[in-house]
Image (tube, rainbow, N blue to C red; front, side, top):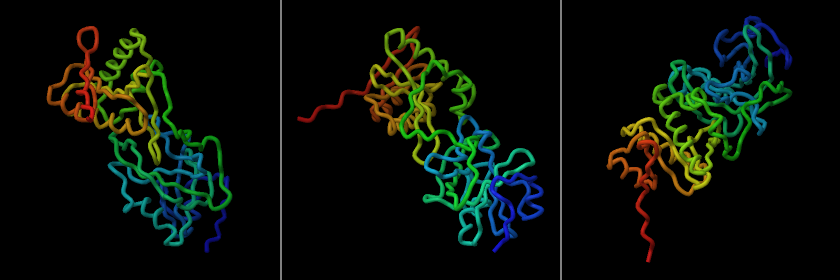
Amino acid sequence: MTNWDIAVGETLLRRELHDRWGGGRYGGMEPSVKAASVFLFSNPSAGGAFGYKYDGWHSDGTYHYTGDGQEGDQSLALGGNKAVMIAEQLGRTIRVFRSAGRLTTYAGEFELADPPYYRADALDRNGETRSVLVFRLVPTGDVLRDTEDLADADTPEPEELPIEARNIDVYAAERPDEPNAAVRREALLVSRYVDWLNVRGQATCRHRLPIPGGGYMFTDVFNKTTDELIEAKASAARTFVRAGLGQILDYGRFIGHRSRALLLPLRPSDDLIGLLHEHRCSVIWEEGTGFQRQDPPATPSAG
């Protein structure tokens, strides 16, 4: 039994914390044998890269904390992630600190919630998208709750967003795993297509879709007039078409729509059109000063 002597809300130098209670001085998740604890150091106010912010308080009363590992997919079997998962088994308390520079503030004691974690997408230090662990923690006593520690608002339903408000930088932030040049071409294609639809009296928007367990996805275009879900890609090459088809099938699970289509800068091969049609997905491509489309064959009626 440790005689823990740091009060909730107390701020001290991080080196002072470790001088008193041990644990590594630089990591975000540090086991401390002396304190029989696992220290978690968080800075939710900094926000997540490219608009994703998992860490902090969520509306269900749990505190979320992104796991350990700066490159590649994070693993439960290594480092601080393992230390958190086996903390109860080893009789260790999970203690959360909010850090800023060399100072850290004690936020209180926590334990793993049920379920204890979920997986979400985030960038690693090389700018590549990977799968991270986000731990869900519940307080076991008095804890520090500041507004700056609130995570992104939990949105149970798709949120409609105006396409006009989006610029290239925001569009790129939503697609950190795609080459910048391709992202820019895609954004410009979307802009031209939306303008073309608007001239014809068709209303458009896009959506932020909450992912079960945490995180968001952003659609490219939703034609409100026809209830069509549209994903854009910067090329009609096979790798782009396959990626776009996967995205639109994923989005379609979370938002109601009558039809779906892939928007491309030019007409793809007949083989790729056949692939899209097999999944009841139309193809739209730019041609001259306008756009053309090819829809899947009508499904024969039973009889």
